[in-house]
Image 1 (cartoon, rainbow over the protein chains, first blue to last red):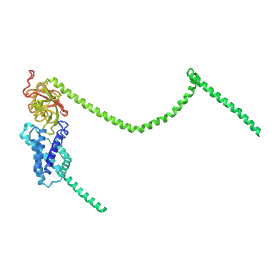
Image 2: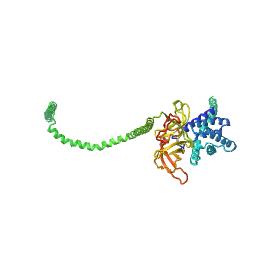
Image 3: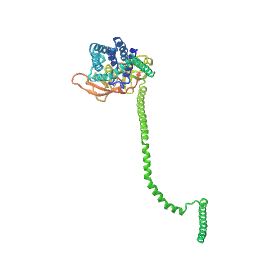
Image 4: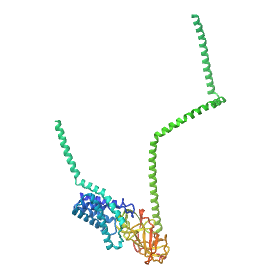
Length: 185
Length: 291
C-alpha cells in the first residue's frame, strides 16, 4: 500500500511538473519534483521499495520529457543509489542535512549525465551551464522542504502511526471512564 | 346689588346675541366665498397673485433656511450607507475586472485561432489541429506533448506549425498523443533559406528563445530584419514557411561562416494550439523557383 501510494504521489508530481509548473515550453523555474521523491526514497525506504517507487516514476518522466530514452531512469537511479549509499555510510540522518545533500547529489548526477550524453549523443547538443543548473538546485531544495513533510505525513498515515496513537488514547479514555464510575459508586 | 346684577345679565344677553349673529354672518360669508370659489370660474385672480407675491418670499426664505439642515441630514444618511455601498461597488468592480480579464483572454485566443485558421486555409496543406497538454521541464531538451496521435493521422516526422511559423516536428507518437521536438531544442536542425538573398543555411535551436543560423558564407549579404523561411530540402518541412527574422549578424575575422541569430516567428512562450501538417518526409515537392 505504501509503495503504491508513493508511486501515485510520484506520478502526480510528474504531471504537475510538466503541466501546472510549466506555463511555457521555455520556462526554467520548474523544480524537479521527481528527484525529491527519489531522494526521499533513498533516505526513508528499503532498497526494494525505493527501487519499485522510482522506476515507474522515472519512466513516466522519460515519456513526458527529453529526447534520449532512459535518461530519467538513469538520473533517478544514480541519484537514488548515491544518496542511499550516503545515508547508510554517513552519519547524516537529519532532514536539515538531507535536503542540501539531495541538491548536491542532483547537481553531480546532472553533470555526470551531461558528460555522458555529450560523449554518447553529441547530436543532442546538450551543454552544461552553471547559472540555470544552480537555479534548479535551489528550486529543488526549496521544493524539498514541503514535499519531505508531505511524504512524512503520507508515510506516517499509511504506517498506521496515527491509528496506533488513537487506539492508545481510546484506552486511556476507557480507564478514565471506569475511574469516574468508580468514584461515583 | 340685585339691580346691578340684573342689568349686567341683560347686557350679557344682548352681547351674546350679537356674537351669535356675528359668528353666523362670518360663517355664512365664508360659506358663500367657498361656494363662489367652488362653483365659480376657478381663475387665479389678481388678489391671489398679489397674495402669492407677498407670501412666496416667505416660503423661499423658509426653504433656504432649512436646506442646509436638509443637506446635512442627507449627507449623514449617506454616510450611514457608504460602507455597504463601497463593498457593493468593490464587488461590482471585481466582477467587471474578472469579466474584462476573461474577455481579453478570449480575444487573444480568438486571434491565435484565427491565425491558425488563416494558415490552414492559405497553405492548402492537410492539417490536424492539436493542443499542447504537457511541456518538457528539462533544461537540455525542448519538447511538448500534444493531444493528437496515430489515430488522428499524426505520425513521427510530421512538421508542426503555429499560426506564425514553424514550431517543430513530431518526434514520437502513440495512439492518442504525440511528442513534438521543438525547433528551439539544441538537437533540432532545419534546412532554411534567407528570403532576400536565397542563401541556404541550417537553423539550429539554442535551447533558449532564439535560433542559430549556421553555414551561411561570409560572402552573403545578410542584414538584421531579413526573413528566414523553410527551404524544403530535407523533405520534412514544406518550402516557404516562415521561420523567423534575423536579429543579429556577427562577422568573425576567422572562419568561413557568419554567426547569425534568428528570432523565431512563433512565440514559444505562449504556445497553446498547433497544426500538424499531415505529410510525411519526402512528400513535399520542390517548387521551380527555389534553388
